[in-house]
Amino acid sequence: MYYRFRALRLRFSMWLELEGDARVRWMKQMVQASDQLVAVIAFALMPNHVHLLLRQTSEDGISIFMQHLSNSYTKYFNTRHNRVGPLFQGPFKAIRVDTDGQLLHLSRYIHLNPLVGHVVDESEWLRYPWSSLVEYRRGKSAWLDLHPILGQFASSAAHEAFVRDYADQAQRLSQLTPVLLENAH
Image (cartoon, rainbow, N blue to C red; front, side, top):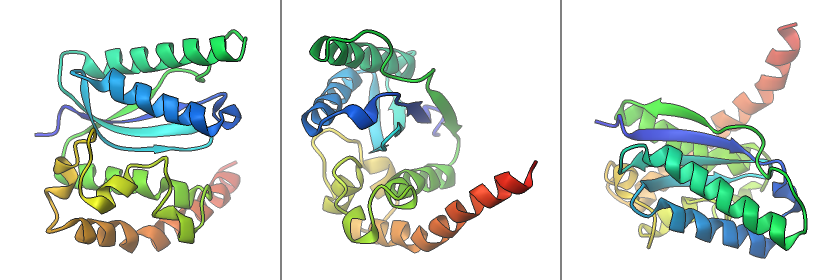
């Protein structure tokens, strides 16, 4: 059923240099670029990358969407800051989503990323403006397709509890990653 869903990760090379209004513009361009190509299910903008959970709505929609999004924003940013060169670091990475369980876990992973990545602390996490979790908590959105996720819960509060229930475990796992990588050599 979910062969058209993809979780994507695009690494920024200049995100830390963007001011708040530039981040808002990037979000607006994401909305415009998605029109008739993809449905945005979930997202989290991080200091050096972005996570997107997308459903393709037209042939090659994800590839075209990512090309439009990165090209148009890079042109805007370079013109505004009188610079040349890429804004993004390398191609995006995509993971195919095949099951409801995978879809739910990926959306939860995306929504936990600002907390686990120490971008915000727990008191700010649920209000992090660069994540779709804010709209999931409201239970409505003007541009996100919340139904594939929220449709599997009795309410937006039940979805929030699902995400929160994994927060401690996700934080513990993120602390293990450097230790595991260190010991792998």
